[in-house]
Length: 281
Image 1 (cartoon, rainbow, N blue to C red):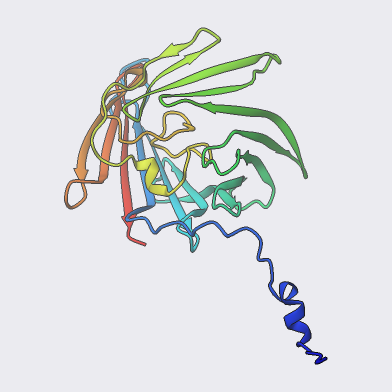
Image 2 (image 1 turned 120 degrees about the vertical axis):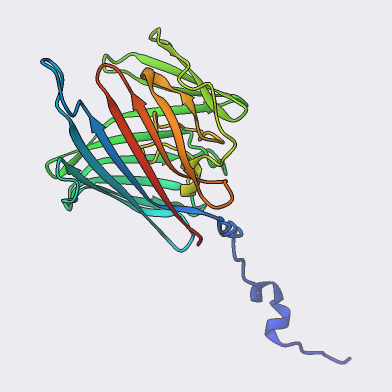
């Protein structure tokens, strides 16, 4: 009888194959445009005030966004000048961290160049969802962070439901209603109801051009509220609190807004001029 001998690795072939575990999520696609900077100039009051009127005042803020190699914001720096608009100073900054699925996991906010976290937002997601199921808010005191509360979210085709505890320990619920992909109505269990926007343009929403899946990471100056689901387009015409938005300029091709003005006539004249700078990754 002949005895055949086989190499050990052939007998243990299964052991020679490594298990690489679950596949890594696909790298985010490169967007066509990204916002690099938003400059806001706020003018309030009257140049020649009458008795009882506020004198004219100027405020300038510059919001700079820095991106990582996956085209996601990794930090935001806010420079501010009150009065002397040429003397910009670093007022605040945000640092963003992501999970393995390239979703915002944590945002730390700082005052100026301080190394102490002023506020922290920690996001949780269900499965592979890109919209958060909840986030925790932490505030910094001295060298410690204290949790302020948790906000939870549920999503419907045209409505986002937000629940959280109010200052009195009770639970508040807010419904964000969307029409054609754009935020149009807010309803709250505390009896507050508002329809801040009724008209939108056909241009891509500016908030979407920061390559974030939701608007809860931080607020930009063009935001009326921090929306969990970003609007598809940009609101125009009449807005909340007697605001009126006038679009002045578009980029080449007329697709992206590059400058606009918001006017609030009451209780005193207010003018916000926004200039947006883009780049192609």
